[in-house]
Length: 612
Image 1 (cartoon, rainbow, N blue to C red):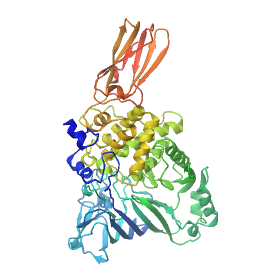
Image 2 (cartoon, rainbow, N blue to C red):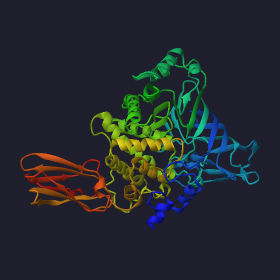
Image 3 (cartoon, helix red, strand yellow):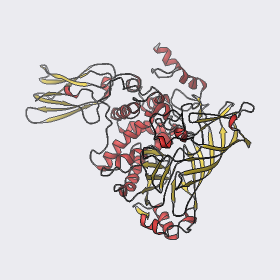
Image 4 (tube, one colour):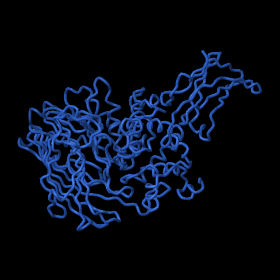
């Protein structure tokens, strides 16, 4: 059986579900971890005009979408995501929403496909999807179609509404707001998991040209680059905005007082803000008539000198937010040069003072966390730019492929930027080995109670172990190889596993199997201290009681007052042994042994000490 697995699946000895095997058999994916010779993905171009009424909270929009079917398949339907239908009556949700926000969902005024009006009785609306059947004229592979939609809806008004919010009476963060063509991919066909408020993104890489009209006095921040700033901002503020694009220090584009007093804009009438973005998986925007705007920039590619324009947009009452632009810029620089050590892919990043901790391409909706430091939250959400945005992760199925990385980055980068232990280790040990500790390879869409542990805690701890196992240089080589292969594409788990195997020059299946496929838990113990008479030395015995491999980190104290630290990577458990002998210096008497550290999970720390 092992030989059969090796011959069919290259070097993997991992279990490969039958439905996943098909993509490799078709040649869209390769067992060496690279995109296959027949890899493809679809794409769309969105031209959107929209407006938001701050008084009624009504958003109205029109869009024209040019959809490219790059697949070899003839599509008998077009599937549209209406994610705001999370608030539509009767739609399944992962959590309760305020009853006052539940209504008829997105109001579709008209839909056209290739210029032909589609009557309501000709399309199927279910959960948060709308299917347009093309039975009479399917969309052939290699061809394009045009979708036109007019729609409207009211923003959810409850304070509990997540990810999109009415932040105050005249500040709004708007997400999941436009009809979007779902992903049709080589592994599953049309994405079929409805948006329930829990599992997040799976989108194609699209181009956007979006114009948002707001009443007088409102500024708009959005995914993409602002195209008409010179037409809207008065000269003083336009100059500040321009200078901030190449500045290294944080400066104010405008304050709340300046925005309210007037003079920021050339016109005292309603204005239309235009943004464009290329090859991004989604589009969000925020708007306010009284928020402060701080900005700076940072170099993200030392070879080319390319910079990213970084902003923090916030309410004056959010006392932590004056630090956010600096944190975001420094974090982006460190992401580009250290972890993941890959140039930040976007030209813009705006952290908007909303009500959540939620990422979008070039935007974050982050609540104020004062009096705590905003560093970890800021770093976490900004780091999502890599996963799932630059790398088009299917979070609905494999959230560990992005949330686990963001949790890993926010810990490592926060500690590095702050100079102390500020980063957050997700508490895996308390849940490890329980019925709620589900292996991450179980699809995220199938999880509820177990979702956060499988998406955040367990993979974060796995990535800590992986970095320790490989060392920074090899880890970085694996990471950049993975990113080079799959940026702007849709990597799946075996693309990740096989790329890291090949780039590391090691078969890491023993590691992947324990951390991502199996039920189990990490548990080490100090079994005791014995004497090695021949060597005139004592030996510390460490036992592996659990089946998930973790590093061995020992601090050994001797009777003469000296101490030594011993560290072994998780590779010591690779071959299935359960006991590890740690020899001590000859002539030294051990009086105390302490096992473990901050980033090594252990379900029973009580047996991690020996001696006084």
